[in-house]
Length: 357
View 1 (cartoon, rainbow, N blue to C red):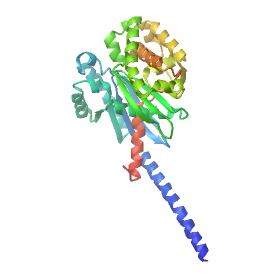
View 2 (view 1 turned 120 degrees about the vertical axis):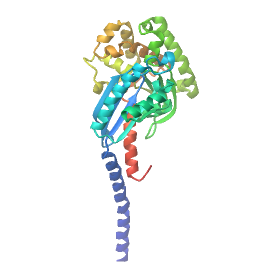
View 3 (view 1 turned 30 degrees about the vertical axis):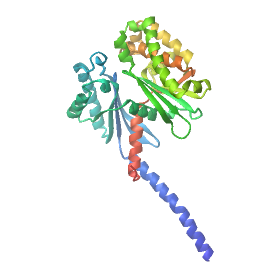
View 4 (view 1 turned 180 degrees about the horizontal axis):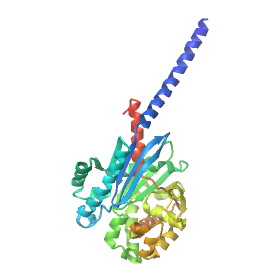
C-alpha cells in the first residue's frame, strides 16, 4: 500500500509541471490573441502600414496601406526635409492613423529610417506628427532597422547553410547584414549602412544620366569599395568560396526585378516572396530594364511611374553586391521592417502575459 501511495504521489507530481507548462503556454497565446497590432515604416520614399492579428505563430493582415511620399526629397542637397515632402508624408500618415483607429489597434509602433536620420529637422518633424496625428514616430538607428528587417525575413532563411548575407536597398541607404543562420534563431553578427539608396543616388547622378554606362559603373565601383571593407572584416569571401553563404534580398529593387523576370501581368506578392533567382537571371533582367526608356519603364505593369525613375539606381547597387559576393543566387523577400515590428510586438505581449518582461 505504501508503495502504491508513493507511486500515485510520484505520478501526481509528474503531471503537475505539464499542466502548468500548458497553462503558461495558453496564457502567452491568449495574451497575444487579445490585441490588434499595427506597424508603420516611414522610409525615404514610401510610407507603409500593416495592421494584423495573431494566428498561431504567425499573423493575418487585416488592413494595410502604402503610398509614395518621397520624404527624403532634397535631403541629399540641403540636409533638411522640405515642406512639400513633409506635407505629403503627413497626409499619408493621417490615413495610417485613421486605419489604426478604425481597426482598434492597441499595440503600435511607428518608425522612421534614413531620411529622418539624415535630416537636421527630423526631430521637429517627429514632434509635428505627434502633435497633429497623435502618432509616436520614432527615428531608429541603422542597427535597429537591420535587426527589425532580419526579424521579419528570418522565416525565409535556410538553416542548412551556416551563414547569410541579407540586404535591403532602400530610398536613402542600403542596409547589409552578415549573420549566422545555424540554430533555432538567426544571429546578426554585424551590419553596415551605406548612404546609397535609389532616391539619393538618382538625385546625385540625375534620373536619366544614371542609365548611361559611365555613371552606372561609377555607382558600382563606389559600392564595391564600401563593401570590400565589410567583407574583409568578417572574411566573408572565404565563406562564399566554401559555399557556406546564402543571400537574401529584401527591397523594392529585387521584388521588381523578380516580377519583371516572371513576366507577371501585375505585381503579385504571393508569387514573388520566397522566390529564388540566379545571378545570371537577375543580370539579364537588370540589363533589360536599364535599356528601357523611362516612359517604357513607367508603363510596365510591374514597374510603374513611381519606380520608373529609381529602379536603375537599385540595379547598380544590386550588381555591386553580386560582383562582390558571387553566391550565385538570391532569395527574394517581400517583407522586412513592418513584419519584424509586428512579430516583436506579439512576442512581447505574450511575454508580459506570462509574467516576463
